[in-house]
Length: 309
Ligand SMILES: Nc1ncnc2c1ncn2[C@@H]1O[C@H](COP(=O)(O)OP(=O)(O)OP(=O)(O)O)[C@@H](O)[C@H]1O
Image (cartoon, rainbow, N blue to C red; front, side, top):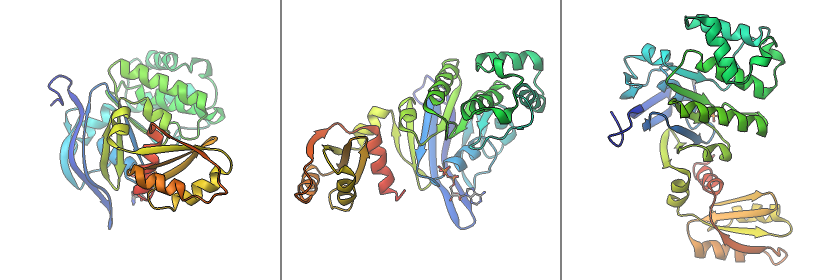
């Protein structure tokens, strides 16, 4: 099936549900992702991102709902899905006392990849880790560990990558390089669903999905997400912005307040109520205010504060 009649869908699921005991983790999840798209998955901690990813790659059976991943039924054909999906978990799950090449060789054997040596050489070349082939995985820095994990994920030439917070704890340069690789892979036709808490990463996705309490409550391109939030944002600069932020966060009319470097962003849906809130700050605060275009980060802080995250 396709979304607009042209591009086939890599993921096409409706009303997925999953509970653990009494806890409803995914409530009613409907999601369509066209092939070749990079889709960012955002949401507060515990909102159900990992659970969704694990249902999509056939590792968890949904309690209800229906649909397909790579054309295979998510309820009935999890094994077929798993063979064509690369799943990168949140935690580094390789053998620290094996070298980079040995780890990749282990994975290649698991997937029974033909012409293993050549496939490993090829992936190491593409991911820029050939120079580290003989280094122990345990001695790699965070960024190189992520590259190894991504290399292992794509060895069996999956059609879909599910990446669960792949760059958590990795420095800015390594994150940027990692994202360049993701874009290269998507350029070759791979579909990518990637969960992240980083705004700069969300901005590099073609589509953003925001999950709250097991449902997708916002989706679209970054500009669409910002526009549809209908958020008014004021930026304050001056002294004591941290104290001002703390006070404003408790003031009616302010739905989100956050300090970015040397400025304070306050946001809400009602411009007049927001202005009133700002005006109610004690005289001791001498901030200069101006209305600014909301940024994606303002919108997410707003969404997170709404969902209690
Ligand atoms: N196997 C399990 N058994 C019981 N509870 C679980 C299980 N897996 C997840 N949960 C619970 O489900 C909720 C959602 O978890 P999930 O990992 O899907 O969220 P998340 O959005 O990925 O969060 P984070 O951003 O922190 O990774 C959490 O409260 C978690 O404790």
